[in-house]
Image (tube, rainbow, N blue to C red; front, side, top):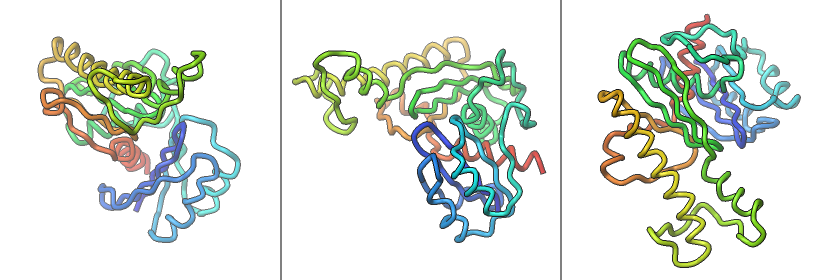
Length: 241
């Protein structure tokens, strides 16, 4: 079995893989990885791959190494299967973005794909049917938008992400939340529409921690997979025995 560890800006995701398939996932903190030891005791892991978009805290690294298993620290120099990376600054490319692309190509090879990851930031990444990864865009995620409106104004309150999102906000709270949530929905729908004008057969994957709701016309062309980054990491570790 393989263990994939995806350390993000706000949390870490641990996923167990057996025969190429995810069998269990847990969420833990992204500093000390407090849930790691208990998770590892429930499985017979043989290898670990770690991807991180923040510096790993000393305690987190120690907890990983204390498992006594071979660890692949996924970085810019790690050989990656299935795709050709044409990003102009590969050393600044987030490991989670590249892993998500590999995960998408693993599931749907030989097709133009747009991978949308809705987390702390919303990332858009394009890979073509020949496996060439071209790059993508980054915009603020839902919680970042809500936080920014509060911190960069004098009177706007900090609004929770959960709650009513009417088409037209009927008070300050719903105006802020709807502006953020519906703004993201329109942004995603617009990105897909613009890309499909150039690539009519484009497939779209949505992953990430923020659950976004779309209308039927947009939802019908999106495949959701919460394990997309983990699938990519598992494919990468299999490529690096």
